[in-house]
Image 1 (cartoon, rainbow, N blue to C red):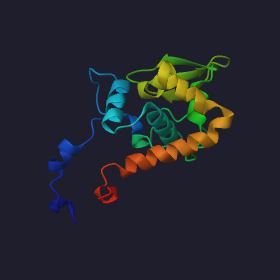
Image 2: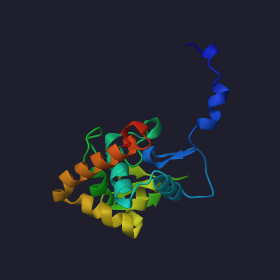
Image 3: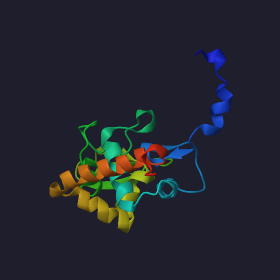
Image 4: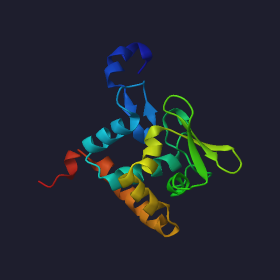
Length: 168
């Protein structure tokens, strides 16, 4: 296949407008990024627990759109860890607005910005229900539970709408 064989314009309507799982928002919408994320999660039939562990896991795996580091609260990018939740719930940091849909996580003691985030990241610290799940996953003894839950949620998403898996 070559470019001249492809009608690139026909694919424009298929471009995503937002994808909180990959920390992407195409433009400034009247609906906040975290609400777009909840809407997408609902369409995907995800529970709040599944949404929480998928987003946290995808951040530590470094799957953000365009390779951005928003929400990648880890020094071991590419490893499935609970670092996203540990950092998110750590009172060492203060969250400061840093532009459109962007925040800095500044160390309260040193004043250094250690991480950046979006509204879709920080909703796991500000929404009481999502924060409760984040706090569970942030615990040292929840690392294995987090990995198990992430794999189960990932499998659910990957198998959604697969007609070959439906018992007939």
